[in-house]
Length: 179
Image (cartoon, rainbow, N blue to C red; front, side, top):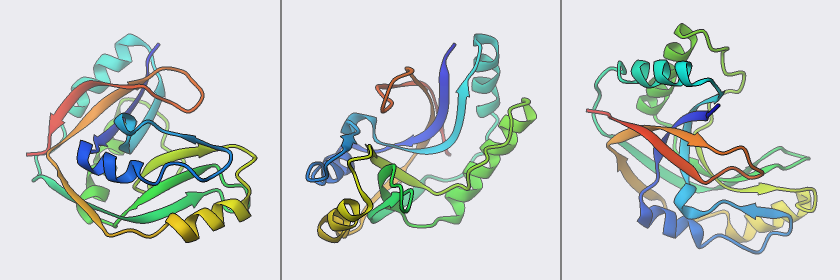
């Protein structure tokens, strides 16, 4: 039973720039740069038949132009209980529209709505308890700002992930051009 999600690949040069922020935070399990991506829709564990239906449905995504994206700094999820460190994606109506369309396609196939609000980001590390709020704040004060990193996404992908702590490695099962 594959665990699936859709996302946008991060170009190697952007991944290398983000990887420079690895280290210096106790309790962080760093994501491998080859696994950096922008999740559009987490799908979860599905059987093979539904996986095929999902792959076909994603092919129905309406054509749109390539998608310019910019990362502009680091932040964390979890507030007083931080659980992830990420690079922020500058808000983009076109990215929001792509994500919303994928949400509609997945609901049409009978999947439950995603309960989390879409916050476009690239996860850099998953945080254990040793990553206290104070340690995360200190890390972000030192590492959180950087010159914007921009790239243009020409496609999105359907990924599979093995069931593991910290995710990855991720496999592109199918790719879909945006134009």
